[in-house]
Image 1: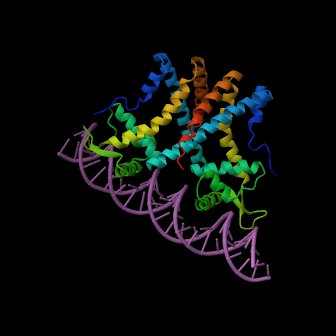
Image 2 (image 1 turned 90 degrees about the horizontal axis):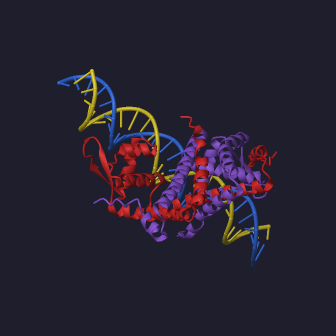
Image 3 (image 1 turned 45 degrees about the vertical axis):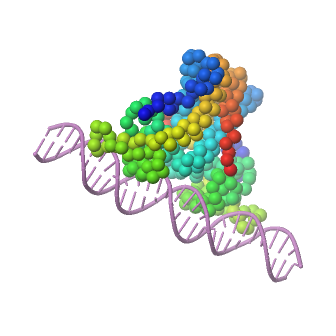
Length: 171
Length: 171
DNA sequence: TGCTTGAATATAGCCAGGCTAACGAAATCA
DNA sequence: TGATTTCGTTAGCCTGGCTATATTCAAGCA
């Protein structure tokens, strides 16, 4: 009635690759570390979003606006919508929320009078720099502690994780 | 008016650690790989959740229930609420949604008549195994491709990322 | 110039998924 | 046994998505 191998689809791979128990153990440790890190990230993201009273998408939007603005680009609602993968209608409400919270301003677009330039307020830019910057610094430090060869190993592993998985895009 | 260092808080760390340009470049590559992987994960999660017509929390709940059940544990709504970090009221609605979608059943708890045992249906268990299992297999394969020393490097790096960041819990 | 078509944002109204408060039923404790 | 605590549910609210539609302006053309 209950299949004990349910959460253990590794057997097939293990069998194919001829790994011994010790190898499997190490691999599992890597995966566990990966899982732990993701969980930490998720939790910290929840904490900092609670702190700034923003939802996940709003936060992503803010990061995007700040990044673009720091490169001197004019950020329009349409561009935000596209970046986030949501509709422009939802983006209008999103900007309403950010504006109500004093995070952004709607300024006229310099050349297209149909459009807008969304600008982040100075206070929010500072706050974002503090919270986002902290976790960025943590990542930076961790990567900086590695030797050159180790960095190469880690980078390769990460690319390996992300790379060939782009197959199941289905629309 | 516009500070070009806004998204570049790395300068201080770089300065402290006495890294040269080449080092910085490599570190940035590591971080970029990290970011790319996270983005991939996020996108794929969106895709598979759309496929199963489930929200993020519902999916997490399902994974939790399947995992516990596979260890022979009785899963109660309260335990689900605690694991997800949401209220029991929200969990009631969550279970309503999962039950309406045919993903779980409310069965009587074997020993406590106030409580319930939430059970995943066979169909959903199979579907979850397929989608979740695929990305798990991808991670497993990537980790399996590493040598023993490389696995150690990666694990250490990941722990380093997740580890000391648990300081800012602020309730 | 004046008209038409398309682009960019906004509005209205719907649904999902969180929350708090209050409740009933069962377990537990004095 | 009676009081208290625990567990899940219900009711009602708010946020953040969506679609469909409206509004305003830009751009191309007769």
